[in-house]
Image 1: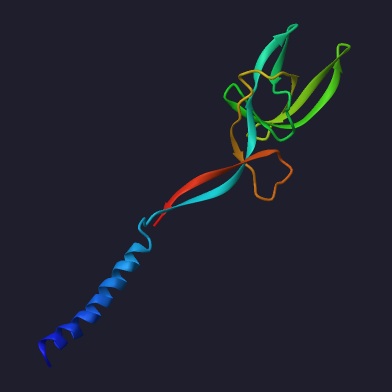
Image 2 (image 1 turned 90 degrees about the horizontal axis):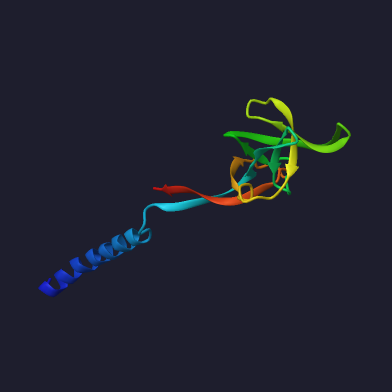
Length: 146
């Protein structure tokens, strides 16, 4: 066997190994890929108290709906029902709310759009099977996976 034949016989398999090894490492240049998942979150808005004719009223957005979360004095409540009742000869609107501990309460509300209650805040996650609760769909980053 001559020297050229010998080196070409050794060089061919080594070149093939080097090429296959290099192409395998370049298939995933970034070993961590980002995963995104779609999440449905409740609509959460700010509510604040205003006293009108000596009665405290919660000021809520005009578009308030059942299932929304209201942030009132660092307390998050969910609106379960809205109804109109007559008190002292005047019609007023009542919202039945439920807090995180499951306690229900009813509060008088007035609907008004202000700069404070116009912005959406990130609410709690709605279960996948719940299609009736008003929610905002967003994408969240779960971070990289090795």
